[in-house]
Image 1: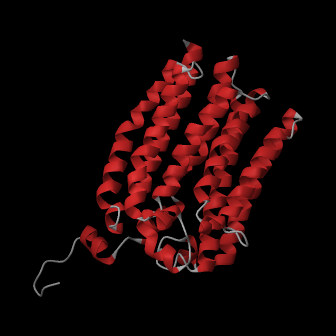
Image 2: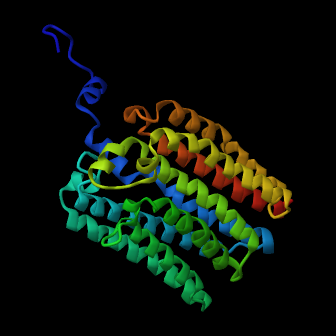
Image 3: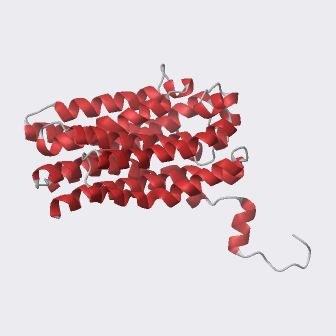
Length: 313
């Protein structure tokens, strides 16, 4: 600062000194990301309501709470596992880097997992049916395999596939089954849409950390393909989300009301343009995954709402 200059305002100081500790904690907790846990349960339950006209709101509330806890475990444990490989050494909003206590962070994550599984156990006990518990345990196993030792399958570039199944078919069908204890081809179709848009979030999160991934031997899809080719895939992935929805409406599997999910198109366009233009400039695209989160939120919200409205109409 020049001599004689006026004192910097707090906002100016924050911009010079980097994010505040509060901002780092918010980035570590990632509140917007929890829509990833909420939307599959919402969509699966909404489909069940459209089919039978009844919603067990207590089951829905417990399942949502359990899903949020399990996602918290996934996020927290991933910070711990990434700290072990050193890939997060430059990630200031890692929970491990913020606290300096990886073991305590690990057990906090496990506590969230236990709480989530208790909720699912209650649902299974209430219905005298272990099906939902089995599906959730498989999803948790895939979640662990993503970053957890010794598998660390995310480092082999198949994290998006694990994400697709965990938050797509497994989560949506489990939520549907928790309501009416039966399977549904419509639920499976909807789970494809939810799974793709969820995997898109993970795919977008790799663009700004290619160098760190390379340094630690993580072969994410973006590392394997390069940022340019990966960016060129974004419009096609986004198009598949809306294309599948339109196809399923045309086949009569989805009600016309589900076309309300096309409200997500502006976010798809924004994401495609951003990554298409700045794919190799990490500072410009570090928030791209949150555009993908917004896309996920609005598509999931209106997809489920479309099923609900079809019953009310």
